[in-house]
Structure formats: structure tokens, C-alpha cells
Image 1 (cartoon, rainbow, N blue to C red):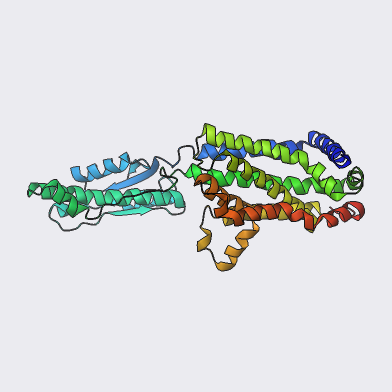
Image 2 (cartoon, helix red, strand yellow; image 1 turned 60 degrees about the vertical axis):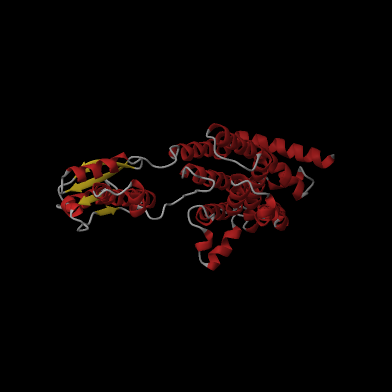
Length: 389
């Protein structure tokens, strides 16, 4: 009971500190909420739509105009301009007025009707990978559809049946199944790693910052004195309010994406809650560990910032980990966001049991226990270190 009373007293002291210092309010509530709204609303349509493309139609026949109309009807593409030459269209791409353009040379329709295989070219800008890849797909499809339409009309005039025409134009029919995300919705798999990653960034920083402020303002001895110099009791009391605030924030985020935005979640609510608890404890544990390694406000927050930024690249959401070099693949185990992302993908998004991702579960538990290896150094820093800016 004595230890519980001491934890309660230290937690009350920490609440007073949180209330007086507005940095905590902004970094623990305001900025994470803004990041949540920003990322989820940025991709609320799932895929970027009506991206601007141009057309260089030197043929200007009913067939070429039909191809342009079909391109404009695609969900991702919108024909915004027609150019008299390839040079003008290329300049528009370089000036970022359009992302791609279709070039139909003069005589294309005559060559199609006489089966001389004309060349239709398309150019797209890969400076933006997402827009370039999506528009490349649309332009490739429309190029194939143009020749297929002429071939279909020619074969129909020769008396071929619809089954024969279909077998000739499309000898292999694709049966596409996109597992777990059939809508190809970017919001479903990008927001679910970017927003938790931003929240982890603030948890890292706030954990190291709160310990650094005790050292900076020489409150460490007072803090430890409230726990009779028991560093474990002092740590538990200090970070209890922060953990509760972050848990409430993450539960609100999960309610928002699963009930308001209707993100798919096959794993059930108990897995979502467990993953949220592990996320908070692992993030706070890493922040405490970073300060314990380098008991300096500036250095520990720098390490936390670097670790959080690298997490976005090494989590495996933007680039698959299995395609990375061997040493980098090994490094991904050192980032809590990687374990969180894999647990989310396996247990929540796809609904598989935790046993299929037990090593990532152990990874988050290990990050939670990291402060145990540096608590003596933190205690020594609070009692003897002098703050150096």
C-alpha cells in the first residue's frame, strides 16, 4: 500500500507539471490529433482521382477522339489540355501542369484499318511514384483498347462470333483477387502506419523530455525523494498520467478509423486494445531507455527523433523489408513501429491469431522492458549529474 500511495502522489505531481507546461498539451493531444485528421482526410477518397493528363492528337479522327474520350472517362485520369506538338506537352510535364500525356501520330487510324501496327506513345512523370504508376496503367490500358476496338470491328465485319472475337483479343482472362484491400484504398494501409508512427514519435520525445526537464530544473532529488529513492516507483508514478493520456488518444483514433471511417478489422476488439496498450508501453519504454543511455535532454531527444523518422522507412509499409539488403533487414528489428505494423497487418487487418506473429509481440514487450537496463543510470543522473545545455 505504501508503494501505491507513493505512485499516486508522484502521479499527482506529474499532472500538475503537465497542466503548467503547455508543451505537453500540444505534443500529447493537439499535434497528434492534427496528424490524425490530416493523414486520414488527405487520402479520404482512397485513390487519387482526376489527375491532369494531356493529349497530342495529330490524327484527329473519330477513332482517335474516341480514344481520348475513353481516357478522360477513367477514374484516375482527366484530360485537361491538348497540345500541338510533343515538345509543348513535354514542357507542360516539366512545368508540373500535367502528369502525363498521350501521343497519337498522324495516320494512326489508317494504319489501324490496314493492319500496319501504328505506334501510340505515352509519357508519364515518375518524379511522383504514385501518380506516375497509376497514370501509366491508364495509358497502357487505353492504348490496348484502341487497337482492340478496331480489331473487334474488323472481325465482326468478317462474320466472327463474339466468343471467337473474345478468344482472339483476350486469349487469357485475368481473375484478379486483391486480398484484404480489394478497393486498392491507400488510406487503409498508409494512415494505419503513418498516424501510429507520428504518435510514437511524440511518445518517444515526451518520455525523454519529461526526464530531461527533471534534470534541467534540478527536481530529480525531489522526485526520487517522494519514492524514498526507489527509482522503479518513481518511474511508474511519473509516467502513469502520460500513459493514460496516450491510451485515451489512441483509443479515440481507433474508434475514429474503425467506426467513423469503417476501416476493415478482422481481428476483433480485444486484439486492437492489446495492440494499443503494447504500442504505448513500448514507445514510453524506448523514450526512457534513450534518456538512460545518454542522460541529456538534447541528446536523448535527438536519438528519439532519429529513431522515429527512420521507423517510417524501415516499417515495411512503403518498401517491403524482404527486398532490403540483409543488414538493413536485421536493423528493422530495432524499431517499435516495425513490430506494431506487422502485428496490425497479421492480427487486426487479416485476422490471424497472435501466435502467427509472436516474435513481433515479444519485440514490443522487450521495448517495454528496456528501461530496466538503465534505471540505475537514470537514478544516478538525477542525484549527481549537473545539467549541461
